Image 1: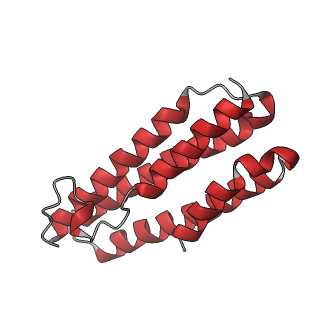
Image 2 (image 1 turned 180 degrees about the vertical axis):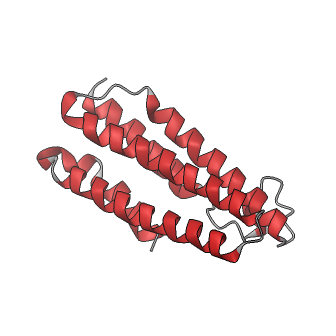
Length: 146
């Protein structure tokens, strides 16, 4: 896969990720848009968010970038999978009625996202003259999550 083709596919995945409503307390985040704000509705929304993010990650899984971009590929895929897993855990925790467990998953999600976003940002910067293909999209994603 050429670097141009890969960077296009990578930017598309970032856009798809950014377009996902990642607020499970927002009724619009639920698949059918009819959330009622209940804990069950939030759990359903978090589960749906997890599925959407996993699809973004899965769309990247089989891309074949050049060797210089392979670490970015791997880390970005792992980022999407990790975020998806944390939303799934958060969804399950909501069903436990245990506020400490719910809080743990929220904190884990936020910490993981911050750490991985920073790691990927560093990988992009290390690409030197190829960084311009990825940096604007990733900076937008990082800005969205703050």
